[in-house]
Image (cartoon, rainbow, N blue to C red; front, side):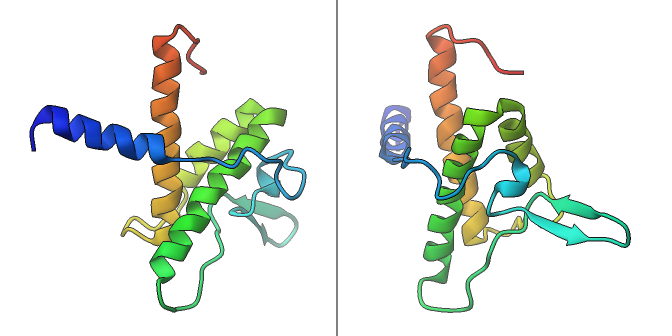
Length: 135
């Protein structure tokens, strides 16, 4: 595959990502409101686990269904960004580096990371238009 064909194929994949920008089913004000985080009880307090997504039981097309679940989680981060950009940035950073993140290509992780990658490319386009880098 030549470079131009490869670029066209990658561009088609990026353009095919469609995000549902409808409001989240519940208010998302901080990382604790995200469906893929969870509170772990300790002796005297609770700790937020930044990557504790639901998993499906073994079934036909489990990977594909979990991939769709992971992709949808990015929409929650987009909703969180509306109220707190720092929390949205932290949600991405902490999820990707959490101890529960499965690096072996699990469906949830694959869908989540694919959607984050699509958003990153959209961000690169915005930078090319002169938008400031968020840091």
